[in-house]
Length: 180
Image (cartoon, one colour):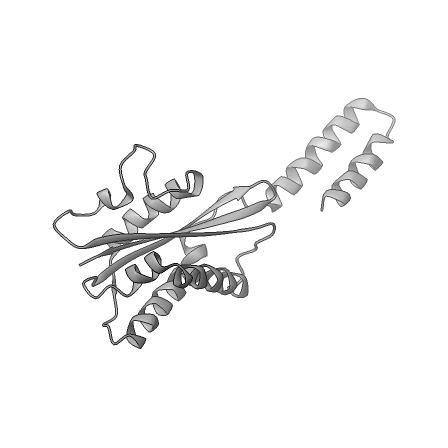
């Protein structure tokens, strides 16, 4: 795409009238900019989040554990944490508290975070499934994250995937909040 833009601008610059050149360059830039998504709605990642829930519950079932129930209030907390972790990769929040501090302290609680970055991502079902599969495999490979997914006292989960444009690509950050 960059080469195509360069070629168009080069051809415009051959034009003899400066004002026409400037207007043409601005219009071309605006047209290409409009084709690039700048925000991603939550429903654009619903396939990823559903696949996470299915995979985590399948993992729990393989260990003889009951399925986790998706909880809307935990998903709201996960949305906060996914957005925070997309810019500051840590279980510590930007205000210095732990991510689990957003959860009731009178319950068992846990947090998993995962991310993947792509140079190109168009949110097709196949791309979402591949992104989820990669992040889920990484979570399973980490003993601490695995233990959260199969901890018997957890009964509820909130899941959210936040998408951020980085350079010419996308970073997908997923947060998982667990409670009893």
